[in-house]
Image 1 (tube, rainbow, N blue to C red):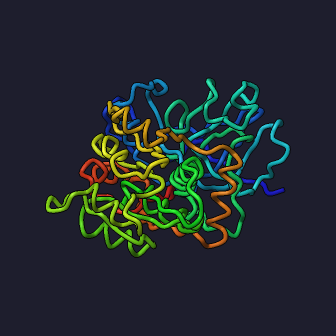
Image 2: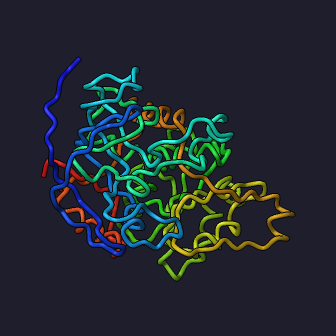
Length: 355
């Protein structure tokens, strides 16, 4: 078993108040509890949820400030508690949004641990992965094969797992069509690839030519630009399917409300609309008559459980999913948040904690 020299201090991005900014500073390195591991985070993906945590615009309260955000951390186990016997020092693991759960409630007992009323959320209710050394519950860390590149796999730990779970929840079968709204963003770029790997045809929906080129390069068979006012979006999405009846499923990854109101207009009868994106203060709205007589399913999909996690990583390990990402130093995190607020993110950003 390897031994690691653990410093007393580390660099981190710390939120000191709601609304930010994130402050790059040194903080103490924590020690793991009996059922926890200490992870030397090498890389962490940056998710839109991290921006919500900073801005404080969700009705779910964060832990008291200061708060270290981040929940896509890939790194190496450098210390562990006595109740973590199946993890070895030196193992490669991932920190996910779900940092821990009670493992005893009715949800945990049925593999719905993300719904646990006592769930711990990385970078939200507990400190997350925007630091060089982070704590996580041993039972919930993602197990990453050592042949996987930690830099490249980091975004899988939230974006990948989340969209993979959503595709499973949609019920879409190989050969069917799925519309992905927000297809040019971080989650969308991964959703296209998971959908293709699962045998689905993808219709990408997003704004702008650059995102359209990105979607098609990743395997989308059609792209609909919602910013093109000369086209009827609903009709364009329907026409992208061979019979003109619309996609069998819709994955809503958008960060604004309007796409959530449109989806039932173009999904085919008996299709499913899966809500994943979390625009602040948004509501769903759909005509009841239309939903009933066309037997449309509208549902939410949260993050995956431990089994979903391993399946999502397996797709990555087999080379079926490649994450389009750009790496910057942890010290540049606030710049990434600004790009998010300006809607200029294409693909995914990853921060290197060493700089």
